[in-house]
Image (cartoon, rainbow, N blue to C red; front, side, top):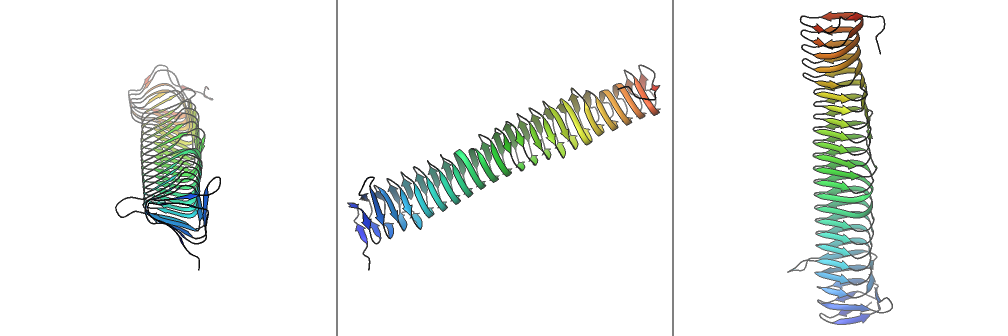
Length: 411
């Protein structure tokens, strides 16, 4: 039968190899032999209270209560379990690297170099100054990774900060998460999320605010508050309750935003743009459908289906769509070109080209060119009106020039 090795409370002992278990008393110190110093334990290290292992240590398992400090590397083949002392807290503080199948600490885990484990479960906080590699990390408070982090699932109740590249399948955080960049598959954050460099993602679901930087690429973005991108963004769907700001170009499937969208470059969508407030794009905007409750501003707007704007449209190179609808009292600066055009009452519009054009009451238009034109009462045409098939007008319509029926519309 293998005999245990006992280090008495408040004593110091130097060891090299322990054939059985190593039992360390409260406030005891264990030192190793060799350069660098190390102690190898064939069994389990059992810490009976606060203790110091003043060297690297390898063992089958490490278990204890209170504050356990390892001045070196910690390598166990099985588990690490540090529980709260009866009248205090618990922590595991390792100056070197930690390698274990499972690490459980009631309060705090601090690792000076690298952490490698299948599963880490810490009630308070984790600080890793080197690289982190784990399948699952579960933390009640905060997780801080100074080096690269490679993980399957990170589930944190409080906050996460990763100062180097991340490669994570799922990041689930109750409060705030900040990463430098890399790849995070599914991002589920209760508060705010920030990536300081280019990020690849599958899904972002954030209750508060999102900030991305660099060239980011991924799937769906669902944010309750605001989404701000310092750079380019490629995505599938964006659903944001407040504001979306992208300093570079944006390319995706669809956008649904309650407030405002601002894009510093080109804005390309294969599906629908649905915005309750304003849309501003420094470059060209293209989509299948454009539905804006407030104002729309872009270098040019192209829609394969419909453009419906409640307020104003400002373009340099005009709007081109299958159908265009301008809301009541709308303001349009730039050309409108569509098969079907409806101008809401009391709107002010510059030039309009269309096959079927309906102008509601008290609209002001500069030039109008259409195949079939219907103008309601008290409208004002300050330029010219050309039509190829039919013109119907109601009372009080003013024409600066007489309407002209032509065989071909002017371009």
